[in-house]
Amino acid sequence: MAKRKNLPRTPDSMTDAELLALLLQFTRDDANELAEKILAQFPSIADVMEAGKEDLAAVEGMDDDTILLLRLVPELHRRYFLSRSRAETRLTDSHDYGSYLLPYFYGARDEMVYLLLLDGAGRVINCRMLGKGTVSSASVPIRKLVQEALTANAAAVVLAHNHPAGLALPSKEDVEITLRLREALEVMDIVLLDHIVVADDDFVSLRDSGYLRRL
Image (cartoon, rainbow, N blue to C red; front, side):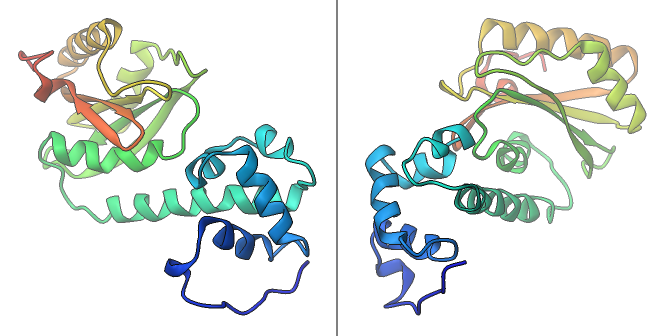
């Protein structure tokens, strides 16, 4: 493992290339050269942090230890925001739901479906990932969604999924599955509070957006 060098100055005064090279010094002796190659292939630090293993491996000179190091950074970032979200005691409105759920989709390259399970006072029981698909689809049966709510003894739930390659705008299919899920849950005396659609760092509430005024 490469020997870590002392910081030349504070991190916030460094360029993207300098920061990346400093990070790479933990695994590489040629950190500056490799940092230049990475940034030549990826337009921004965000693209580097969101790159998949295969994309990173395509950079000349990349090795498994460096790929792991680069992928640890966004994962730590994601867990930091998750730990902040979990500090909330009660979720009472769509802004709370979206803010709580947003970190679960941080850095996601595939479409994923989560079900946020709440008790009668709005306290979080659990948040379960129920499906993961390609960038264009993630199919989860309504029966599985209802079963998760029943197993957790939830009084209310919030459905959430992401649009990795698009805008946080609900599709016709999003609205249809929300209506179907609401009907299935009503039979079990469980409330569907909202359906949150996430894209990048943004989210839209179907309840607040006017798509489902009856919710």
